[in-house]
Length: 280
Ligand SMILES: C[S@@+](CC[C@H](N)C(=O)[O-])C[C@H]1O[C@@H](n2cnc3c(N)ncnc32)[C@H](O)[C@@H]1O
Picture 1 (cartoon, rainbow, N blue to C red):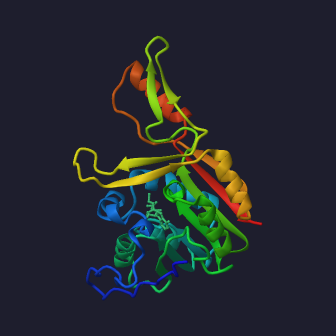
Picture 2 (cartoon, rainbow, N blue to C red):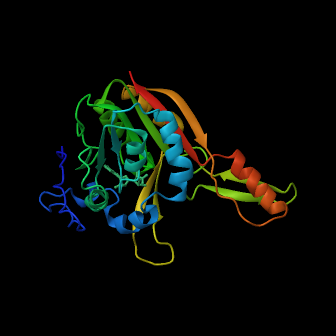
Picture 3 (cartoon, rainbow, N blue to C red):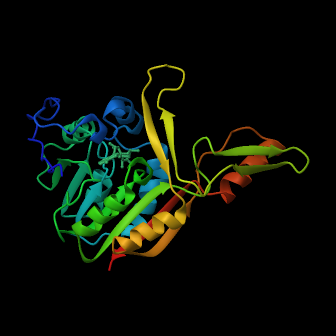
């Protein structure tokens, strides 16, 4: 087991150096460390447009935060959820992620806030979270990035007080599988449709993070069918009590039949799945 490490607070007013190199998680346990610079820039200060307009609003709806609650954000990345949760009135935030560079970015944005703490840890290792400590746990856009979702769910369940809530937002496992689901155009019926070339078999799909730049940076998207994810949640002691299917807000600016069909498809076929579970 890799013990969780709390990085030392960075000096005030300066960009922090990366957390202490000793001991560091092994490269395989560092999550998105290799692409941290790109991801930090893509998400930015306030989140990508998907975060701001779709993912975070859904997470906040399902969480229904009560003032003063404590929340652990698992696979927190560069900390996109901190500000919205503080704004919602939480009393304490813990962010946990395997990437030292993403945690360093998170820390540099929130270094002076005593209500916020950061932990570098591989959440697929057993017992990396404090037992029954939090009112709520979140995991945004990362269930498909971990190698062992059962271990992730079990660490989230472990962290929750009895009755605590866990909220997940992930790429919709039925409609959004990289390289396996695609948009198609039916010219006869003028319909934009979603083609699903595979679903049942788990897949590990390499994703190039800078297409066209040939940097060789990749992440791996782990597809698992929905039944497998729901069963793993149940086995971890997390009972699903609500869900939302979330739709892309993006629309092309063009007009005409293709555009109409594209809008309709975007309104009918979900992009993300949000789940709320309660620790049984
Ligand atoms: C797509 S990013 C999402 C980050 C953040 N939740 C957000 O919405 O911006 C996936 C995150 O999962 C983290 N991650 C992947 N595998 C992990 C693991 N085994 N333990 C902890 N974090 C992991 C990565 O480092 C990365 O920050």
